[in-house]
Length: 280
Ligand code: ATR
Image (cartoon, rainbow, N blue to C red; front, side, top):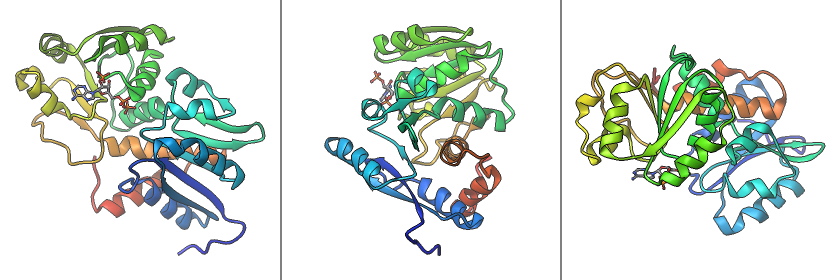
């Protein structure tokens, strides 16, 4: 057990709920293994307290913190500096303390990109279907559109899909449509990768919309972002685990805070040991 002293650097996580987050496990065990004098504490912060929590992080000299649901968008205007990743996403999930004040970053897009690569999927020259059009989708579409991908966004609320497609600056093609049975079925058959950013896992979502499961003919990879439950079975389909993205994002946060390459393999093995299983 690390002894906390007056010199210990404090990191935090602001969100609600945070009780089931795996980030404290990844960071604290990694700090311990590397003998780093840092600690990572989750704080349950309701929406009305976000402003005070950010002020607290300032005056208590937090060395950096993560932000999760539901604060990723609201925190943007409470920070001093926003980097390009956060600006493009319109959302922040990592905050660093810098000489210029609190600086906001977004690792969703890069975390998803690296997770796919870790599985051997190269997101370049691919047909990618992104389901949902919230903060995570915005960041991921932006990252994917900076490679030569053909990205299609399908969302329940059409205007949100349009707003993402309009804002992406990459040279890839980005189109959008409404999440309907017909649109989903057609795109499932034509995609190399499905990134589902909604809280409903792909097998359930497909069923709810009345699309036959055979529309997923085994050629497309499926990447469900929600990690707080067991993956619903989808026989014959390659799945990318959101746990891989979680570790990639933790590594990116580590790099933002320490300005050094992250000990990725240690961070990954810490989570594998804690869960008692690998996810790949
Ligand atoms: P995140 O920051 O994780 O992306 P979010 O901003 O709340 O989360 O976005 C969630 C996305 O999932 C939204 O696009 C939402 O659709 P709407 O834009 O129409 O609200 C989508 N979503 C949530 N529940 C859904 C459901 N039951 N079926 C389909 N889409 C759903």
